[in-house]
Length: 114
Length: 108
Image (cartoon, each protein chain N blue to C red):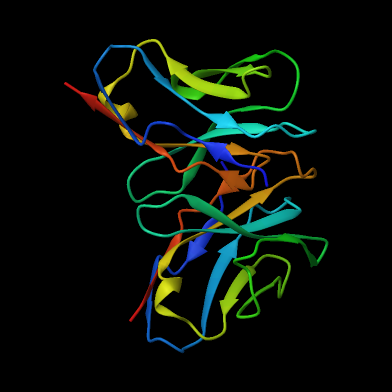
């Protein structure tokens, strides 16, 4: 069964550094998403991406965040200058041909900012 | 702003007993409701979803949920739980709005 993959599984970085989290969505999916989950808290929507542009974003997704689909398979989340409060689990998800389709989530990347 | 409320942060229940995890959502024109399960150190897995049609939705692992428009609720139920059902359960509205989660702990 196709699945969403994410790399790395765990990323440790120093405050102020840039990080790039990578995701490979399911191959025929068209909608891509990033969520984060701070330890012990709820899942929070960051951004959705369709047709090579951001379709929706939350208040959390400020100027320090950016997303990109650099090729036909990868979907990346970049945090330009990490802060301690960016420490969280980041989940990528993808869905099919409609925004109402089921989202499939990756296993997540745990980001630790020191 | 749209919101999802999960009234119970933790629900302990004995094995083979029934369970109900409660979820209320803020009313909106379009109602798309989801329940996800998250096992420790894993991503979210869709249990079931309501987009339209029958108000009783059946999902995987023996779970079901009932959409109640008048009460703006979408409670998750299982008639008999197993130890393996121990996990965090999230209710979500229109994919983007998640509740705070309910930790289901099944006791032997």
